[in-house]
Length: 142
Image 1: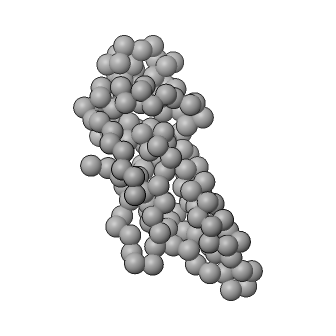
Image 2 (image 1 turned 60 degrees about the vertical axis):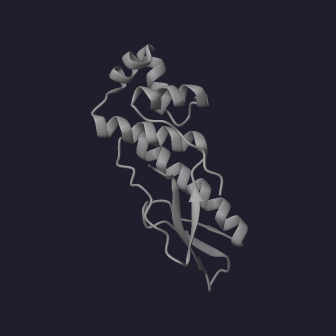
Image 3 (image 1 turned 90 degrees about the vertical axis):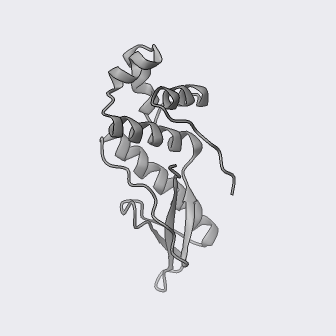
């Protein structure tokens, strides 16, 4: 089972105030906020952008590590988490976008859009892609 909630550390910034946010699993997801709430919101955006970039650049997406007691869990938006799960399953199984298109009976342009973070792919299409890869999605509300 894969979960896409990453632990982040919020470190008070003594010099400027607010918080610096870092993610040890995805180090490029670094940001800041003037207060706790804005730091959490910024962390969500930074983490989403970092995962989108990793998909677009064909980079590894690490699975989240276990949170430490001083860390907060930040979840990816559902659509990005599903795209990340499809991306990881394709890499694990050696499935190309062309292979996925054939399995889903789509043209290649449609299959490319499934992983495109800028394309608002319908959840039903993402579920079909996961099924084509022998996976399924579950929603956990915490």
